[in-house]
Length: 128
Image (cartoon, rainbow, N blue to C red; front, side, top):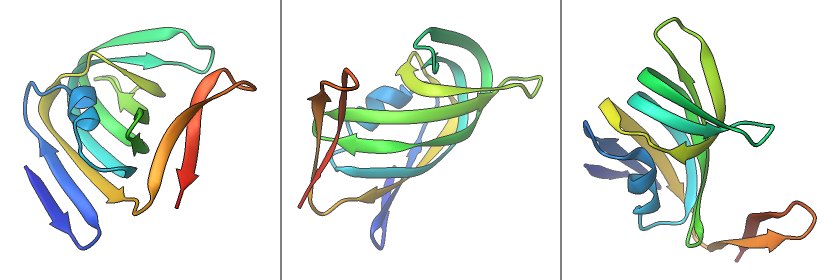
């Protein structure tokens, strides 16, 4: 379900939808400013660039990032059933458990990702 509220888009993802795939399918460039809900599991790239695979149930504590025509850049923090929190770059394997609620603010210009030789990553370029 998608609802436009002024300049914000609110989405609800339903059980068993793939969080990453649904964000990649959003036909808007902008900023994901809020995300809450629950997941069956998730893959996260940590600060040392290793991949952490977590099995659920997991609660999304925080989710934000950017959506561009060249892909998504999302950071996520999740808590396990003991309340331990893990976070980093969202990498996938993230099926919705009960619900995920997203808030996206569209950008009226163009957003692109371009390889930055200094970082070795595709970094955000903001165009008018």
